[in-house]
Length: 377
Image 1 (cartoon, one colour):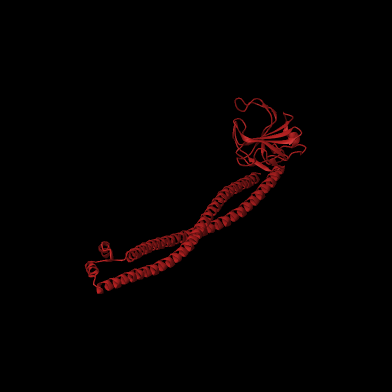
Image 2: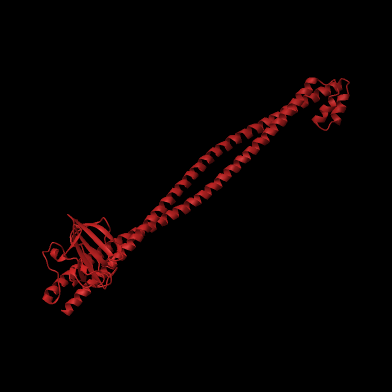
């Protein structure tokens, strides 16, 4: 008998340990899922940043094409202006040569004043200033020479302006090329970041799959251990005969704690602790801390919380005014509003609240009035 009880206790402890393993797996699964979500978010952000870089790079390439076209057009303008300047200088020189020929003609016909002006003048401009006072020079020649000088000066200035614009376009193109290089480096770095995030995300998802499989296996083993514990406890109860107080009845409910010892009956009793009262509204089922507590029947959880008197407790509504209470648990495995099935593990035996030791206070309520649970077990 003692050996069988030890075996039962061992099986219950093993089932409890498996439950702890399942909970540990659940915690790690939750953390791993959170990590996977964070990695996915970071990857999406990185891909968005990469797309922004691609857009910037495309804009720069378009601007480079546009600038290149402007540079080519400006080169043509500069060449044309250079040719125009050469022609203007030729025209200026031709006009100057024609004037000299006329002056020579005057000299050969006896007028020496012009040759003196020509010899003393160091430039065309100075020559014109001196010639301004010589009325014998053709007004037409002087005006034409001045006009050609203005043309030469204007074309030269235009050429300088075009060269400056060309240099500015070249500088702009060089700046765009440098910016293109920077964006290419950023793009390469972002692609490396995305690849690393993808690798980490893949590894995390693989780990998550492994954890889920391990959790399923642990849950399966826990269920096997619980079933073995139930069978062992049932065998122990049969062997013990009348030597132990066991619950009997019509079997409407599944036993909430198979193998537990009845430590206090429903009805009158001596007050176990101050303020507890002499009327006991349920059955106290003594069992080791952590022993599984099962739903006596299918229903909906209306309460699953902590109370100063009941400790961790669960109330299941079975309909038609029928409810069951489970008090003093060490842990709760269900939540308010949750549907549960008959025999589902909803909590674990403990000694929370007003309690003198590890046990389950099991109470049956019919239309708000406590009734003897033995009538349903």
